[in-house]
Amino acid sequence: CALLHPDDYERVMRAMRDHLEGKVPRYDVEYRIRTSLGEWRWFHDSGGVTRRNPDGTPATVTGMVVDITARKVAEEALHRSEQLLLQTQQMTHVGGWEYDLVSREGRWTDEVYEIYGIPFDITPDITQSIKFYSPDDQKIIESAFNRIIDDGTPYDLELQLISADGKKKWVRTTAQAERHDGKIVRVYGNIIDITNQKVAETALRESKEKYRNVVENAA
Image (cartoon, rainbow, N blue to C red):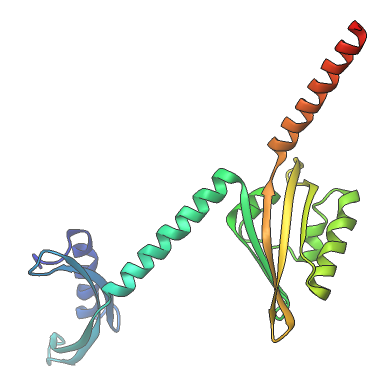
């Protein structure tokens, strides 16, 4: 047990103890072992008691131990990648989305939920999603979406959206179509909260207008 990673020790011992005492039918655990070279490797260990003594104590235990280090390294790399994507989305207010035309199901990244202001466990359908846009812009986004699923025409639009908590936002939404054997099977894109950019543009435009008026009046 000295080779077992200290963070895994109690969990592994508890799993084995619970099985040997008959609380669970099998044990199934993952843990790290330090090799003779000093590196930590991951293993998946599963098995169970195959024969007990007359008094009920374990007589024979059989199982299988598999080195899963490569899988764990891949999982960790994927986790880091997902965390980096999430942090990037949060910093830039960029969300990703996709819509599968075969299953008629959509999927959003976390930042899209943030932009819409709805819980992560709810993904509105296309009709519901469009209703978040301002009345004038609903027709624009609906027309663009229908066009892309019909003939694959991409879109890149700046529209006003009202989140579930009533906040008015400007967003830039883009979409591309994915084809398989010439048929559109998936639509995917980004949605970016550009509210701050729009506010800055408005302030700059008003400032320029004010300066021009001052100059004209002075003349």
